[in-house]
Length: 295
Length: 295
Image (cartoon, rainbow over all chains, first blue to last red; front, side, top):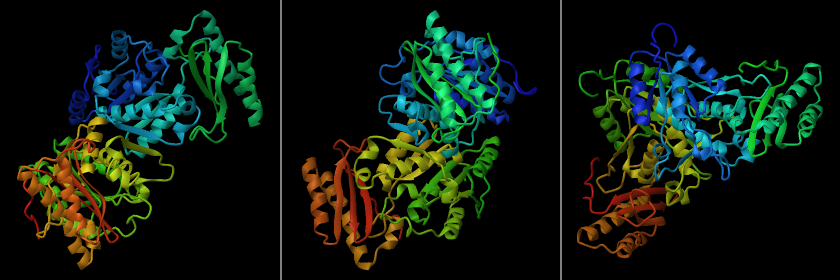
């Protein structure tokens, strides 16, 4: 918690309804407290932990939302199998400094008759948007709801989902939320794999194959740092590295502008299927490739 | 203003930026004040006055927003000619009890690159939604922005725009805004014409022709009160009355469910073009037809 105004709550209260969260946050506000929100789908790992720690350091009170959002899963995706270890998540959130966990039910979030959707055009229509139709509309809709339910001063997202972070920044600005969007760096395991709740799906062989993503990013980054600026050549490095891994099926591997995700630029973005698990990763070329921050 | 906590501000402050309004409202909130919002497109008339008075009576502070929203006008509609008497509106809002007028510029509301839209499906796809494609997406988007910029406890809309009010109710609930939506009755001139900023477009002959709308609603209502329950017969009364007026071109005249605007029901809704002016009106059959509240 920030400064001396906060008292660390080891066991955060679990809130199930938006109206209840609004009451909790309004009471904080009346005493002048500043509020951070960390939206998650739970199954918290060290990447989430970084977000929660950052929020707890920069705000007086931190809310962690945990909601596996059906709207952002497509048909045939892993909505049903997505891990939901709520009690462990709650304890971890508390240890990291969260004051409240907002864990609404799907019925609370999308009651019968709900008909409102939020959409960010352009950014939602490329890369992830092409491979996961409707995904970013689901993200934008749930984020707009979470922002209204919590009304935080700041909200925290991970750079691992770079395109999602760009969609959220756009939404927060376009809809006049007044919320500052903070994007925290990717956290990688010692072997380079970007942390994701979906890594739990990987068996031993797939886990080895999954290292091809960070290997591809590192290879393009090494070339960039050595002076390579040819877009086609850098892109070829990504694809060549991924092609060497037999178990990797590439959805896309591109170099895009980090703001609009359309024009060519220095952000290398990958989506790769390893067996039945779809993984994404990215790196802004020229930045040092993160040493492992966990594991 | 409600109770003794408010001090009447005869000349409300004019706020041009969302961030500025958020600061103003946050300061009110810290002292425990309750806030009402009256979203308008300006050119305030006695219908708006009723909304502002209701807001001022039920809240400690009232914000009137004045913004002619380009997103909710279609090609060939009256965006350019829509009246914009800002200074007169500000003075009237102050007299009626408003503490602040939020009057952003189009460039402030929709800067280059803005890409986020809010959409309420179903309700937006019938009647007005058919005749004004994109209209309710424009309404929903601007209302979501105004709600975020002001974060009121209550927001006030007029029953004249019945379908809009239903869209806003749905949005406010679906997006967990926590805002109570209040819908105030239609205000009619002594001759029955529902007040609208667009009535200013009518010349003397058109003004006479425009009375056919309230005449049609009154005729269906009289039949309903006399026991008529046949949906086809009541609908025929609407159309027959309108057909007697040579200058009236009917976009629609229907009896719909007041919640979903789809199924048959007791809400009579009309959209009629008189010359180049498009007017709407409605009445819930069985309710007394309002005597003139103004004029």
